Image (cartoon, rainbow, N blue to C red; front, side):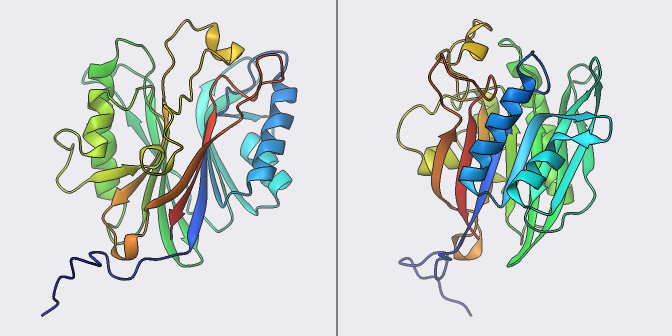
Length: 278
C-alpha cells in the first residue's frame, strides 16, 4: 500500500524543464512578411526553445516557415501541415523540435453543421526524458463565436483523450481566440465543468506569468489595432494536470515579440514562451 504524503503530493518534484513557444505568426500576409520572418527568427534564437508551435505558419513552394526557423535555431526536426491556399502560399500549423516527432495527425474542429475552420494537430515528441504529447490548436476567431469555440474545445479534449497517453506530459498550445475568463477556456482550466472527466490543464501564464493580463492581442501592436478588437489574451500554453513529479507544471512564462509601435512587428499576435517541468 502506497501512503499519501500531504507535504509531497506529487512525490519529489522534477527540477529539469522543457522550453515551449507558441506563436500565431500571421502567415506571409503584408509587404513586410520577410522582415517579420527575420524578426521572428531573431526572437526565437534569443529564446532558445526546445519545442515551437507556429499557428498561421506557411509553406511556399518547397520552403516552409518551420523549416526556416529550424535552420536558424539549429534544431533538426520540423513539420508543417495545412491546405488553406492563399495567393502563392499555403497557411497551416507548424512544429519545430529538438527531438524526433511522429508524422502529424490532423483533427478538424467544427460545429455540428460543419461550420468553422478550427483544427488541432498532434505530434508525439521523442524527448530525451520520455515522450511528450504535443498539440497545436487554432479555434475560430469571431467575438460572437463562443458557442462554436465551446464545441471545438469539447472536440479538442476528446481528440486529446483518444490520442495521448495520460502517463506522458501533454502540452496543448496555440491560438484559442478567447480570453481566460471565457466559457471555452474555463472548461480547460478547471473553472467550470470540464469537457471530459479528469482532463484539466495548467495555464502557463496564470501559473508562471508576471501577474499582468498578458495580452497576446494588444492594441499597442499596430498590426492588431487595425482589427478593432479589445485587448485579449488569445494564445495559450496548456499542460495537463496532474503528473507524478509535477511534470508539466509551469515554472516560467513570458511574452515574446513585444515591440514599440514604430518598430518592425513580428505578427499581429505576441508569442508566449514557457518552461515546464519535464
